[in-house]
Length: 173
Image (cartoon, rainbow, N blue to C red; front, side):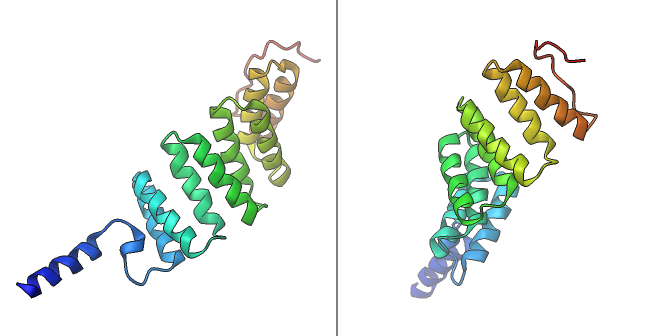
């Protein structure tokens, strides 16, 4: 009976979803578990694994980034922004972090802050078409039609497949 109880406990530990309950996992192992969960759209599980990776390495920018991605997928934009901010703190030169943070800010109606994030993305990655496009959307939401038209034009110049929305701005010739 004692052996059966021991076996059940070991089986529970092995089958547990959270990284912290898996013996011998370092931050990278927890991160990999989080990525697998994120890829499988198990966002809650992914967040737990990324939190474990962060607990083991508090400066793990990638874990903060993908935690933000999982949080945003769950509609938790404010928490996603916090995670992206931590990622930026430890890896300030990753354009995708600013882009994702911009999307989270935009989802909360924080248009000016979103534009600032998209601007940082564009500064780090001048060919980031989606950053230009989303910046244009936020400019439109703020009533800055002329600026939006110019921003959409830049996105279109980078990728001719990107449509130029009608902003209502006076077209320059």
